[in-house]
Image (cartoon, rainbow, N blue to C red; front, side, top):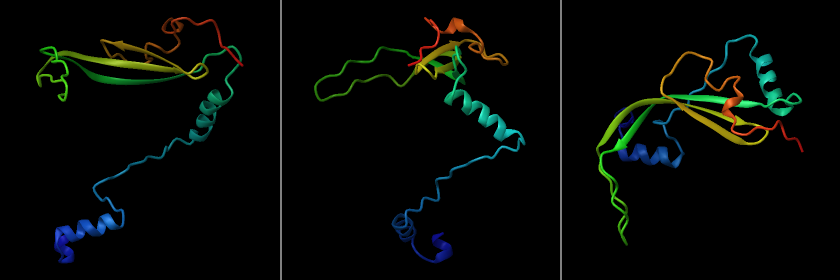
Length: 140
């Protein structure tokens, strides 16, 4: 930009900063091409806004390929005026997949790590066994 405008790099940066421009930052978005997207969206949002009677609504997500790492040595404790220190090296223990569910009514998060990643459905889909102690929905 500075070559094209025949000004210094610092001038370009000063002008961009003055106008709040950050050309190195990019936000992306995508629009669904599914013709039934609006109907599906209404169904999903409807579950959160007005869940069926005697139902538990879970919002489920998955994060795969999380590296399971451990430090090779224990960290050294903090001392007055000095932060805790730890080694830079670590030992790999493979990867794990985290499944998390949010009980929308109760506001509780339920999570489970799985050693293997298999095709859908995720392990928490349709299983009440993930919910530690569930006595039915509580409505106020």
